Every structure is written in structure tokens, then in C-alpha cells.
Image (cartoon, rainbow over all chains, first blue to last red; front, top):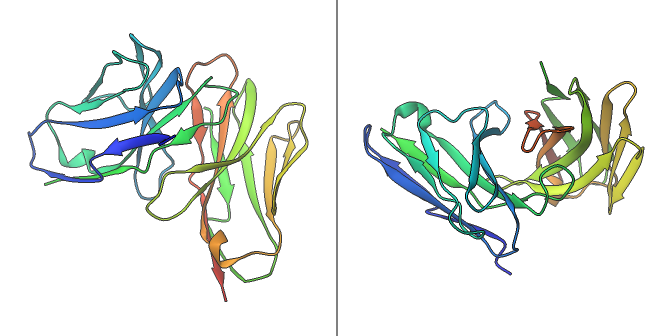
Length: 113
Length: 113
């Protein structure tokens, strides 16, 4: 099993550009989520999904879109990148959100100029 | 407001020594408490998950304790190794929520030879 994979590992964008961060898991987990991690702050939830076709907003959803067409994939879209979105982004999955072990991907380091 | 506070912010110890990290939370209603280890440049990795009824849980040289009455937890590391150098993150989940995991800011541990 590859676990949770994320691509790309690094990305530099200009203000206003759009892009998609990819996340995939091969553990047949229903629950997937996206976090951002900024210096001096804890991980903050952007969006999450409890199954294919079901998504919901987390703590900091503005400027991001998600969709979940399959159990395996959960891409995060930046609609119009802003410098405030410079961060490290982590995708995570688990078989049940509240009681089960959560597995994280290796992260995507995004810089918006 | 649901919060998770960790102390100390950072800690330096000598290889072979023990250390204890603290976590206080105000999350209610409580579901479970997790400790994660995050190596620099990597995603968090789960160490332990404890529910309301569990007071202690071990994972090798890592032992977590939970006092649900005082809303405190600790992570004790025994006979530290250089590879223990990492950030340790306390995470509390809220009962009844689908995705609401509240992350602490972490304690950065450095183990020196």
C-alpha cells in the first residue's frame, strides 16, 4: 500500500493563478480531509469528505474548492491564489473520522508570490 | 471556544534522558485525544489515541496519559533517541462532529547527543 500520496511536493504560483493539489489514498478510507499548516499555528481544517459525493467545509474554507467523485481521490482547488495561501498543505484519510487512526500524506509546500 | 494548549513550546534534552510533554484542552463534549509525531518536512504520524475511559496508552517508548476530569494529557518519552527529535502534536476530537479535530500548536523536541 502506498498510503496517502500528494502531488506536487512543491509549487510556486503567482497571485491570481489557479491550481489543483492532488491527494489519493489506497486504503479504501471513507473519510478524507485537507489541512493547512502555518508557522506557529496548529493544523487547520480546510475541507473534508465523509464519502464519495459528500464534502463539507472546515475552519478555513475560503478560496478553496473540493470534490470527491471517487473514494480514492480528493483534490483541492485554489481558485485564484493569494499570498495568504502560502502554506504547507496536508491531506489525510481514515476509515472513520472520530475514532480511527488518521493517516497523513507527505504534504505540498505552496508559495504564492 | 474549543482549544488545545501544549507546553512547553520547545524542549532540548540529552540523548538517553526522559521527558514529559503536556496538553490541556477545553474541548467539550470530548470524544478522544491523540498524540502525533511530526518530523521536519513530513506529515504527522499517529502515536496514540485515547478515549474517555482510557487513562494510559503506550506505544514503545511513548506513554500517553489522560485525565478527562481535569482535561489534561501528557506524553512521556523514555530513554530518548536522536530520532525522537520532532514536533509532538496533541489533538482532541469533539463528540458528535464529523470532522472537528482540534490541533494544538505542538511541542518541538530536540534530542542532543
